[in-house]
Length: 172
Image (cartoon, rainbow, N blue to C red; front, top):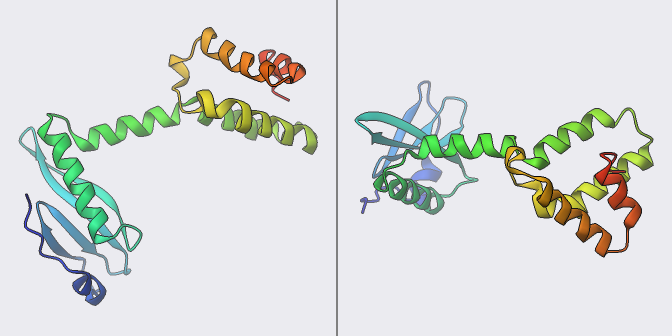
């Protein structure tokens, strides 16, 4: 396990200078202090013989203990033969192509075309009746059976007209 060097007192004492500098903690974890005053947690690691950097968040939103936990998680990913940076990129792209992300883009385009009450109803329908069930799923992995399950849940609540509109792609 990594030898931890940083303390919360040392973090509070860190002040920006003309050039960025690092406060190291151990195991590749360090805090980058920028001239602007921004404090970024970074993890320096090697994967397949190459040196890489992973951003772990901004201090104080990510505490020293949280940063150490994130470092340890990333080290486990590396030990299992995967690159934590590549894994993060894959997660980002999958959420960008989720049903919810695509539906929100569509909603944004519809807002000016719809009456405010109609738009509000479409938002409510998706947020309350659809996203909890298929919102996080990648759009390419959804099939008719997935949508049918959602429609049956909506019908089960007794709101048949909403189910019909959602099935017709009008969602309002």
